[in-house]
Image 1 (cartoon, rainbow, N blue to C red):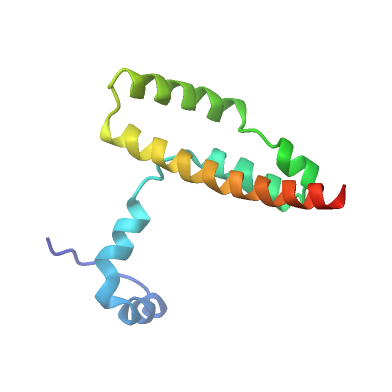
Image 2: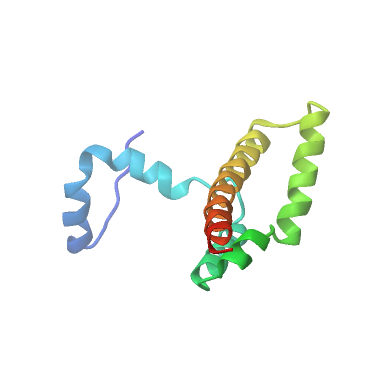
Length: 114
């Protein structure tokens, strides 16, 4: 498909610099995240608050995330996951892995301080 757009000159200059990757960039721009944005915001706000090691270890997903995970895991047990559900569950797993790594670092710090 060929699409013609009218854009300001300064944007046209920027587009020209990434012309070989333009279709990839458009795809990224319109792709919906697998996990709702408020989940990422919850985690980023927590991390930006400069939490103590104790707070990192105690961190838990917000109630909406916990509920959504329950639904996805139940669907998974029943073999009812759509491909979009699979992607969403995989993203939650990546988030969980990141948090586990952060918690492990905090636990090591707390144990060495004790």
